[in-house]
Amino acid sequence: MECVFGMVGKGFAIVVADTSAVHGILVHKTNEEKIMKLDSHKLIAASGEGGDRVQFSEYIHKNVALYQFRNGIPLTTSAAANFTRAELAAALRKNPYAVNILLAGYDNHTGPSLYYIDYLATLHKVDKAAFGYASYLSLSMMDTHYHAGMSLQEAIDLVDKCITEIRSRLVVAPPNFVIKIVDQHGARECAWRQSLPSASPTFC
Amino acid sequence: MSRRYDSRTTIFSPEGRLYQVEYAMEAIGNAGTAIGILSKDGVVLVGEKKVTSKLLQTSTSTEKMYKIDDHVACAVAGIMSNANILINTARVQAQRYTYAYQEPMPVEQLVQSLCDTKQGYTQFGGLRPFGVSFLFAGWDKNFGFQLYMSDPSGNYGGWKAAAIGANNQAAHSILKQDYKEDITREEAVQLALKVLSKTMDITSLTSEKLELAEVFLAPSGKVKYQVCSPETLTKLLVKFGVTQPATDTA
Image (tube, rainbow over all chains, first blue to last red; front, side, top):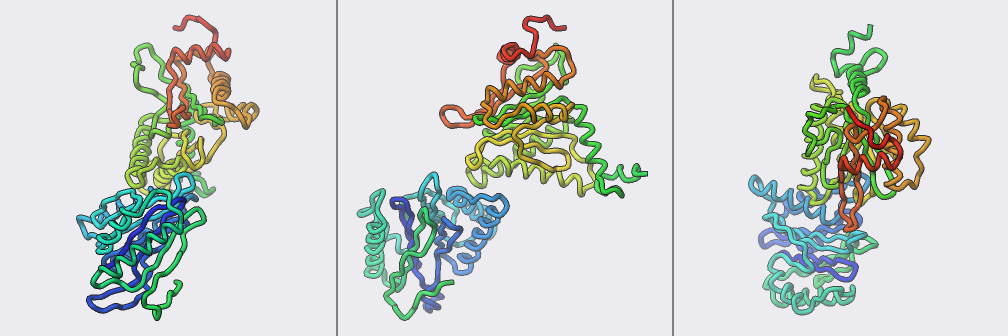
């Protein structure tokens, strides 16, 4: 039931994730942050097995940070995505991580980019992508309305259209979503979409 | 007295020296000189060949210059067999990086990685250090053209111009005088050949005794590593006045 999707616009990349932490039929919390800031200009949106999701994201985050400390320069989004894929691939036939990832980043020379990395270590550089049941609903929405070089407002409108579809058509739709963007100014939270207002957003 | 402390590589002498590392550098002091010069539009590497014989098959192999990856090359001074091992290690490290990140390895990281390997041989394992010094020339998108020098201790530094092997101090002092900041690649070639002709203790310089390689950007934007052919090298030597034209060689 986890929903993660994202797309690339003009000078930015946007990722959206639901914020429900679910265990069976019980919702533990409705403000779980599934999009982590990988470094100043990268976001990693992960969905999948609870423990694996956090464990793997943190592992990638620490390795990306270590690279920067060792070498004085940050990894490019492409390099980070390939590194992530390689880690998933190495673990795949031993003790695999059950995590799907959308990696969004901004590089000075190449602009914004979005990478689709699934739990089998498939890697694709894409303009738009989605994981989970949400993909059935949001991909078709994006196929209709997405075009290259959308402004931030156009992209957020499309995100809202996708969220509306998810809420109306998915039998157990998550109530709340977080929207994060990354552009030349960095990676940051953009907005929340809450249909359960009692769960207030907390900042880690 | 300090002789007691120099047969084991991995212990300090009472004066705080690592004798095996110093002896390795002595060995390199007998090897053919290699000079590297960093210019605005490329890096020039020049080496003195010690093994010169008419019987040598020189068509494809080089004695001093080696390509590590598409964007990095090196010149060596020292024991050739030792150099081959390290060159292979550097090549593997470069490919391992590209395998992980799908990008060329930044030059300094490659040098650092190789130097970490060299350092290991000065601290543990009981094996002697490698008797090789390197000049690494390369290009990456972070810092453009770069020149690095590394020695058997595993220390390295970034240089604008550097020399290793025999007479490297003499070469260094000439380079210090004649190097200028905005030197072009062509001027760097000229300077390198000039310095080598002064430090090599032979009467005339011919293309059989030298190797010249350049790392630069082709018009397409790709990094090119080019070893100069003997014919072109002879022409350059004549052009820059560091050799007698049309002398017969033994």
